[in-house]
Length: 467
Image (tube, rainbow, N blue to C red; front, side):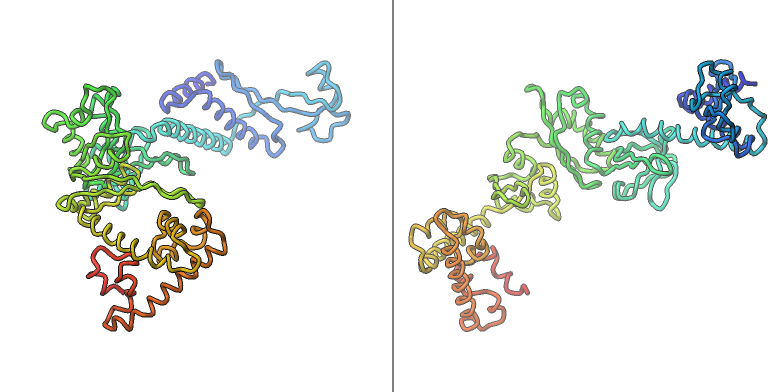
């Protein structure tokens, strides 16, 4: 019977994919629990059980303390008995005494069964977690098992994956029994076992599909540098070649678009723009905005902030007839380009930029004359303010005292005077507005703004009705 126990244990280990040593340890723990229930409350933590891995022989040992007079037979042993087990035993030593295993009752056997089953379940869960935790960020294949409240449960061999509704491609419908590919988003341990969260909307899913379907990417000749998606609608992928004679875009598109069509079909018809990656951010942004043609790209370096770093931004100027194409439907093209490049992208048409520059020049000219009239501000200090971008009273007020203190040669007292003079100037010109323009909406547009000193919107005729 003992030999049969060993064979059954080894067979279960093979079927469940569990290390047989884990099962042997579980068996020892279960039998020990059964032994304790059979012998009553006397057997405590000082009892251990040993199962021979070859013969199945079961031995029980109790660790006892050597004392002169025994008061607790379950935990103590007399010196004479201890020396029969260990010749050099002394008082207060600990010796192990072999106990005779008893036949287990029904309750004890049931306890042993529960312990073994629980240990097997724990080992299976740990095995699943160990297998899938290394697959985070990879594509796995599975079969749709069931659908619960629009969340899809995918069967992947021994494990089940969870595809939440937010990670499904909008408009995509799957049915039980369908085979699908998904992206392993996260694997984490829970009380009910490992939870494997899947996704079909993550940009990484698109990048992995490129690796799967395009041999040049799998071989490392072409690299996917970045990907951005609005799942089910449109995506942009930046690729680069490690060899000069290989066209990365052509390799991804394939002959007559066969390769990219396979990926698009997998994503339920999602349109994919492939652009060539560039280490130069301005070139990369211009390519990312394709199919629109770009006139110029200017990298706008933010002022160094003490609080937190500001994301880089670029100003993109496009011809007037390319503005709507660059922005895209509901701003989609611009959003994807920003995600792809990791920068903020401001798009303006050539006519808008020209109008802004004209207004800024007017503001600069009129603002400088106003600043030079401030008490204590001469031509040199006015020039410094203009060079630092503070070329109108409004800009000085918006910048505040800390910005004025950054200007060389401006102390705290002078900065306070300049700020006070700018505030007085704005208050005086704002107070004059109702008298000059009594009609509706004029109170919201100061005279200074009409004179070009304040920043004016590119389309001032649309600014009147705003609250």
